[in-house]
Length: 241
Image (cartoon, rainbow, N blue to C red; front, top):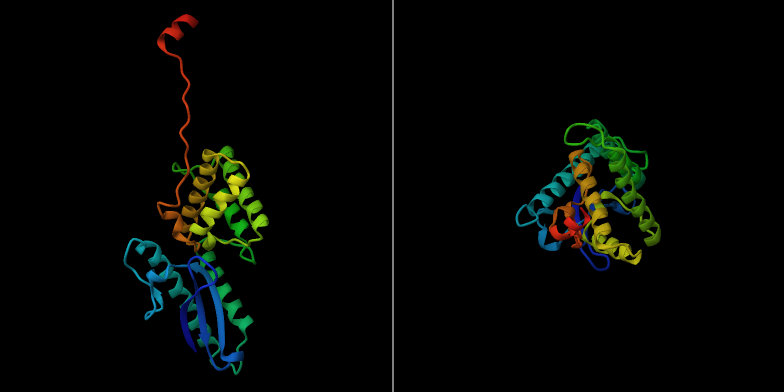
């Protein structure tokens, strides 16, 4: 069994990292699995089939590298377990990969639904996140975070998307902002939603949930607009008094 990672370009934007498995026991000798992770070709080491661990995106690329190593490890385990098998099905390989990822998360206290539901993970993060003081989030804070999730659900329906944490990249940022503008949401409201998204992604990283680390970039910013502060001067206060 030969395990390899490569980039696949579809349309505009960054290409996606694809897992390729070659084995004579598989129909047509190969199996392809999309990791959902997008990366710039300039950050990809084609010879090593891994992200480069240098440059301004080194932290993000190291996290991607860790994920790919774990994925390759799962395939090596699969190869060992199926050593005597005369045939290998694509469905069996994919099921093993998904189960290994689910087992890894659950061993660290992260429980996801059987279909790896993105929304369920998001909601669980909201319900289990603690404040810096170790207390549960206030009802108002939870409500604010759930409002962002509900808006993302509507966005996915409108765009006919099935979103994952690994899909939240700069393309998502710009398109989601455009969607919010189409809803006539003002700068500070849009910024509030991006603030909540970044907070959820930080929590996901702390729980070892694979995410796209584009949210750490300066360009994935929280939009803010200056507001006019209306106040009374001293003479006006004296007149009221």
